[in-house]
Length: 240
Image 1 (cartoon, rainbow, N blue to C red):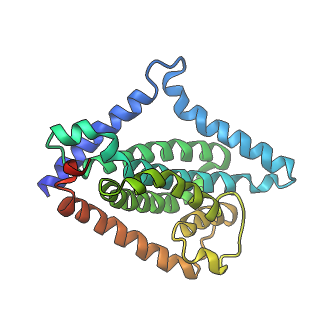
Image 2 (cartoon, rainbow, N blue to C red):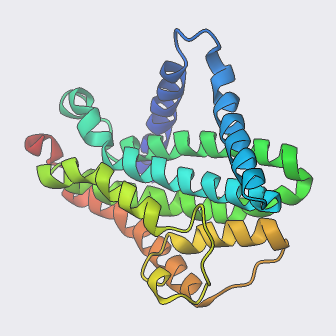
């Protein structure tokens, strides 16, 4: 428990550093934190209006928030050890703190995105919180595994960004598919995105077959990722 508490404390410091550096020396400063989701909301609204489906905008925006939370936590978490090479090699910081810090930054971005969604949807937009939390846990678990594996494999390190590009097109973020479609059942990320889009458009969650698989997959990654990183990541600096 002490190690977990220490990792949590360090992760908060690293996350604060990342957020602070992100907006350092910019004219708008922290305004960029809300300007970016507002800009994406504007693009999605214009796109929805242009194709005559303006009513689909809230669901599309909700899907984007959920995907972005997973994408940042998973991709940046997976690269976190490699990108902090000097800290990994020279400090005794628990390795778990690095992907955890990226999950905290993803949580910050997700909270801002949810706030923007509430501006359009009102309190009913809070129903997206559950799929959003789901995607953050999934991204953290995936990121911890990738943080460990990318220190062992340069091929995976190079291919991880491309993997997320493929996942983006294999996940129904911008388009709708039948929830019983066979091709989404092996993509666990589809379920939280579909849940977010469905909940914001109907205000009623209707669990479907693939959801159980995705929830189980999320729990497995969330538990096993930190354990694997703790037990097998002790010598990660030797591989970097």
